Amino acid sequence: MNWTPLVSTFLLILVAELGDKTQLAVISQACKFKAPGMVLLGAILALGAVSAIGVGLGTFCAEVLPRDLIRWIAGLAFIAMGILMLLEVI
Image: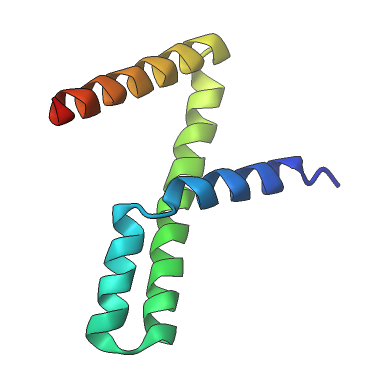
């Protein structure tokens, strides 16, 4: 079994999600409801649903669009987000 996709995805999502607004929202919910188990379950289900949508869209795009086009679109999207973030700071 090839574990590379699992490990790579886990590490990417773990690093990308640390300290983001989703984590802050979960912290807020845990403080508000004082029910950590239910907040954890809600967060797991929500992130699972969002991830399932992402996997579905990614699979669809991989079947319909050429790989190079997907890379260009992703690259341009990240550049655009970076520029927008810089403009917010300036």
